[in-house]
Image (cartoon, rainbow, N blue to C red; front, side, top):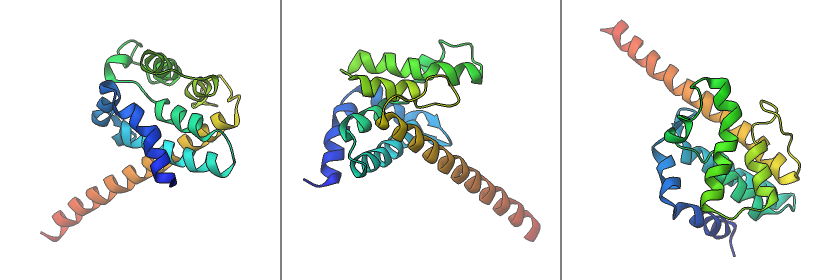
Amino acid sequence: MSNKKIYYDIYKEFYDVNKYRKLKSMIHHGNNRLDHINRVAKMSFYMSKYTKCDYVSCTRGAMLHDFFTVEDLSRNDGKYKSFLNSHPYIALENSLNYFKLNDIEKDIILSHMYPVVKGKPKYRESKIVCLCDKIVSIYEFFRFQVNASAYISAVLFARIIK
């Protein structure tokens, strides 16, 4: 079976849940949260297969690491630091409401923000997702910044040549 088929067989379980599909409409790192999750999950899938880890748990954990909605975030005090610390717990709570998780998947969700939050990854799979999340987040942040800079430059250039 191809890697693409294996990945989408894992992904299908999550996309059948309406709350999970809502992530498509949530902004995250200048994009939507579902696209961010998919980038992290695909990278984690390939890295875990390459390193002969439990690629199913690694991919499932990656798909759930940011499983929270705007409504879920209203539970914290609205401060960014509070969001950084609480969203792994909110994502775990949401995940447990919809899916059966093993210890690796739970650890992935709780530790993906390390070292920003306490809770060092316990498993190799958790370390993979933690690393992939950082790589993807940096990519998304700078891609968004570059796109915004290009747009601003184009607008300024258009005004100058008028």
